[in-house]
Length: 250
Image 1 (cartoon, rainbow, N blue to C red):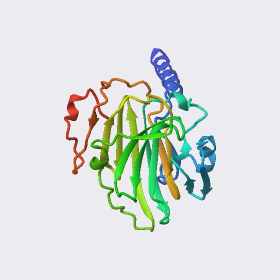
Image 2: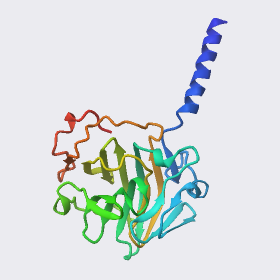
Image 3: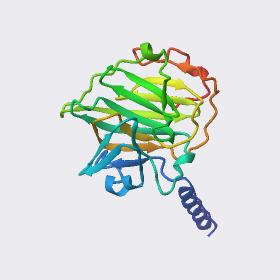
Image 4: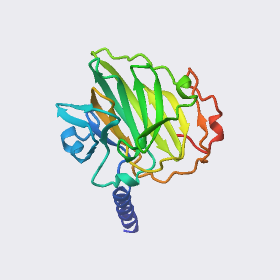
C-alpha cells in the first residue's frame, strides 16, 4: 500500500513539473514526419507582423515578403515575448528569385525595425554579418567589422533556389550564429537583454519550411561576464579565443 502511494505521489509530481516546465522547443511548419509540429496556419497567427512585411501560408510553406529590416516576430499565448531573454531560433529557409538578396534572423527585438540584433546572409557581398540596431541605426558587431565577415558558404540546395538551415542563439550576453551547422559568428554584447526572435529579410521573398524556437522555459541564464568583448571564428569554424575560459557554452 505504501509503495502504491509512493508511486502515485511520483506521478503527481511528474505531471506538476510538466505543467510548470513545458517542452523546450516549439516547432512550426513541417520538419520531419515523426516529429510533433504546429502547422503554420495554427501557429503563425500569434506572431507579430513587422512594418513592411507580408506573410502567406501555402501548403507546408510560409512565404514571407519584406521591405526593410523587418519580418515576423515570435509570439505565443503562453509566453510574454517582451520578457524572453535566452533562446535559440533555427529555421529551414530558401530565398526565391534574384530579387531576394538576404536571409535575416532577429533576436531580442525590443522594437521592430528600430532596436534589436540581427544576422544577415548576403548575396550582395557574399558574406555573413551581425548587427546591433539602435533607434533604427545599424551598428555592425561582426568581429573584425566588414573586413572580418565570414564568407557566405555555397548553398547545398538541389531543388532550385538557395536553401540554408540557419541558427541564431542568445544566452546572457553571448550571441551565436550558425549556417548549415557550421558556427560562423560569436559575439559578446550587452545592449539588448530581452525581446523575441524573428524571421525576415530586406526585400524579396524567403520561403520557410520550418521554424524552431527552443529553451523558452529556461530564462535568466545571465552568468557570462559582460565585457562587450567580441569573439571571432576562424575559417575552419574554430574559436580563435579560448572558449573554455568562459563559464559555459551552449
